[in-house]
Every structure is written in C-alpha cells, then in structure tokens.
Image 1 (cartoon, helix red, strand yellow):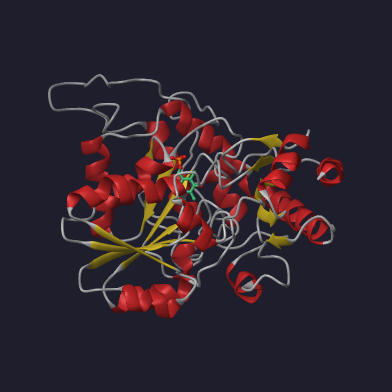
Image 2 (tube, rainbow, N blue to C red):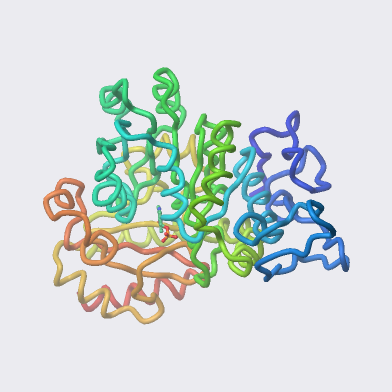
Length: 404
Ligand SMILES: *Cc1c(COP(=O)(O)O)cnc(C)c1O
C-alpha cells in the first residue's frame, strides 16, 4: 500500500506555526515521521530530546525564550502536538495525560444547560465520565445509534453543542458515516467530535470528512507499544484552539515530556504498523468466520458486515480490532483461559495481540440491560490483533477453540 496525502495537501501545507521543513505535498508516511520535529537547535540531535524540566531560566526580567513553566510550555510536548495535528490534517494539537483527560478538555467547551449527542456504544470510560460526572453539572447527554443518520438528526435540539461519535465502535465494530453526520451537525451549528482511537489516522482521517475536533487515546495505536498512557485533541477552528490552549494550562492535565517522546517515537512507524494490523486483522477475521465453533465475527472488512460498503469508502483497510460470538460465558471463558500467545488484557492498539471479554472487562461499567440491547453478550470475545506472524496467531486460536 502507498501513502495517502494529508487531506489538506497540497494547497494548504503543514500549519505555519509548526517548525518543519516538509515539502508542502508531503505524503502520509513522511508527515508521520517528520512533522513537528526539527534537529535540536542546541546540539543538532536528530531526535527531539526529552526536555525533562519544570521551569526555564529567563534572560532578564520580562525576557524569555517563549518558555516559562513546564505545565504551560514544553518543547517535547509541542513537538508531539504539532506532529499529531499534521497527521490528522488539523490546525493544532493538545496533548493530555490520558485519553479521558483529552475528552474532559473537550467537555470543558460546554456550559451548563448544553446537550450532547453521543454514539450509544461509546467507550465505557467516556460513558462513565458523561453519565456519572458531567451530568452533575446541568449537562445532558442523549445516547443514539449514530450509524443511523436520521436518529442523529432527530436527537439534535436547540441546546445541542456537540455530536460525539466513535467509529468503529467498541467492540461490535459498528460504523458511522462521518460525512453524513457532519452535514447534519453543521446544519444545526453543532460541532462534530470524533474519537478516532479505534481506527487511527492511517485508516481514517475524520477532519477530511468534516469533523471539527478529533480525539485519541494515544495509549492505543498512536503510541502503539503498550508502554504509555496519553491523549490528544486535534482542533480545526480558531475559537476551539484558543479555548483548548487556555484550558490545557488552566486545568493542567498535560502529557509528560517522556510520554510525549514515546508517542513521537510511535508515530514514526504508525503507517507500517497499521499495514500489518490491517493484514493480520483481515486474515484472522476470515479464519474465525470459517471456524465451526464461531457463530459470528464482527469485522468491517468481511463482506457480510452490514456496513462493509461504507467501510470501503471511509477507511483505508479495516484495522486490527475484531470481536466474535462463541455463544456462552462458559465457552468464552474456556477460550480466554486456553490461549497462550494472545495476552488476556484490556487495552488495544499495541504491537502484541490482546484478547479480552468485553462484558466483564472493558464494558463492566455499562449497565447489563444496555449491554444486552447493544449486543455485548457474555459469549462475546474481542481481539486487538497485533503484528506477530499471522500463522502463530491462527495456531494459538485454533488450539484454544479446540477446547471449547
Ligand atoms: C482507551 C480509550 C479511551 C480512553 O483513553 P485512556 O488513555 O485510557 O484514558 C477513549 N476512547 C477510546 C475509544 C479508547 O479506546
């Protein structure tokens, strides 16, 4: 597979406040590697250093180099913010201590009385933040099936400020047509926010489809190596950028210099990792779909996925996330306890394959009746397919399925 252009290239090169010498037509892999990073001005070090400092010495009273205090500015963090803004085709990025802190920063754009429309099958932590914390501040949330554009349009009210969408959803891999919901939202002056964690910007770039804000847990594909927790918000509108810059400093949930450096290292290999996640994801989905013990596989790359056509239009490859139905908790337990190479763990998007049980792990905080309505059954198993040799992954699942 070859690199794609950033959606705004070539007429609108990397935003001017980003100190890179990239050609204006730089393609996706080149942007991932280089955007936001120049050789260190002090030494020429090719890799942006970890500026592990809390403060900066000033030349004279009122004279400094643009850096005053570590919460407010840090060069390693600025580099990863510029890098991710360019990768998503946005104007500015803001890095936070976790994906949840990034979502919290977006939520700080709301005022009491405001209303938010949210994908009904949203990440469990996002649901918990909205339902258990933010609902105490006179904010209201409607959870709708955003794969149904008419349901989205019907849920918008004059108080709606944000439409918060995840596509594909976790763990059932339902898709939302981003272009269609962007049009519906913008017709009502509602901002479209897309949590792009599950896909990664290699697979889909929501801003190109009309999203106003993109948020990621960098913990997942962007860092990619299961060794850092973080979040990023990429913004496109000047007023949002001003507010996010202000609130990042005011509330202070910043990404550390070391974690910023890890994410910068991660995005250099994002394209080649995602190619392998795509290839392994599809191969494993096909293997499971053909297995007699597996009742159903949820993966947008399979022709029987109800939104396969949309996936082909909106995504570049179908990613490394899949879920499948075994029929009962007992069968799921046998499989989960029988795998050797797949690690039984929450989280996703790392180079190693992880297997999990959504009903009791990632979605345990979702009420049982909601889980049942969404189709998150006790027999459902989720895999974050890593980049190991595909034959080893298939063999591991085959031997575990034999016990089921
Ligand atoms: C993990 C995740 C989050 C939360 O990110 P943290 O880094 O764990 O705080 C948000 N959205 C999605 C889709 C996620 O997978």
